[in-house]
Image (cartoon, rainbow, N blue to C red; front, side, top):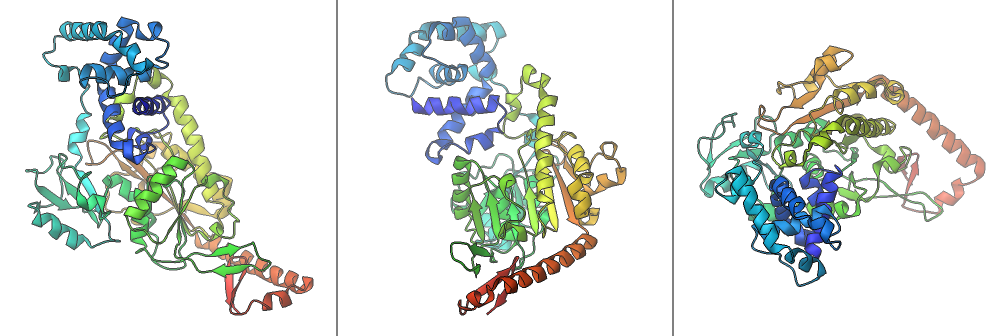
Length: 503
């Protein structure tokens, strides 16, 4: 019975708009995830019908043991549509079975009333735009090359074709190299890879094309002086993409404050992946391990609580922000099944709250003294979460003091035609620096990406301030007599506000 309680909790979270179907299901324990996902999705498909059956039988009024409508939904679904409730005997199961005859009668009455011939005709259909989106996989270059992957699929009987077009592949065994993302392959929408050995081994990542844009646009160089933060990392697709772009190499500075001396320790990571939710953090670590990401340090913490002056994280040069959003651009995860008239009525208020949080994330990222590039992205189609947030970020105190501006179009996926909405920007020309994806038209889900860059003027000013701070620290050390104590640490490294000098 715990399985049904877990599925009901997922539906509760979806009702509360706490994420997309995929995102919420990712928080379920991996051993139960596939089964829970199937029940949740199938229940959503038949939700209007099941609600009518439950209301007609007055189930919730007569059975107090069934505490929520969503618990009733998943139980009635399995009773009517899956051959019975798959649980041992108990008070909750018995509460449903007491109404078994009546529930079946009301279900049949609805079928007759609606004039359908089969139960499947009662289900809500998938979003028609989903059929226009191919099945994308990103080749994990931490494990092998794109050419090796192509040859592996050809050996399986797939045929390499030209670029995917809006009308799809002519046959289900065709696949193509993407023209915008170098390590991305597109397959027919009917192809499934969840149980594929390549996916299980981490050699391929199931990731929509638009979801690959943020890491590709951030473009962190594969150098040891690059320190990257993925501020909202779970489930880890964008993090593993960043890792691959950095060629899985690098190191980061860790400071040991447990001893009297500030010691610089080498470490095998330079990419920090933040996730505040404990369950999603576990999913993140599993994903990164499967993808063989060796230069990533997962951090179970809220990015907004991290001080930009922290000795470790203040060195961040690149930050990826993909915060919680409405998910209104997602069309191939059945999230359209979640919309109700009541939820749509309160949509603008919810969008405003999301936008306030998203702006807070950008402003916080702009406070990091060494950051050069910040990508902000959403899987939303609403200007409230996209152009409006970018507009306010550019006008913020942090942007003005840090000399942040939008990167020129040539640095933001220049071959992509669909750009931002000019009417939603103060300066229409800024819309050319923004990337939009339209579901059903661009062979992707709906998406939005922007890139903020710090100007050279700001970096020069920061260098001057850093040098002043270094000199001040040295003078203070000499005055306090700490120099001799530091010399006792032979063959160790010393740090002065984020720099290191060999002893």
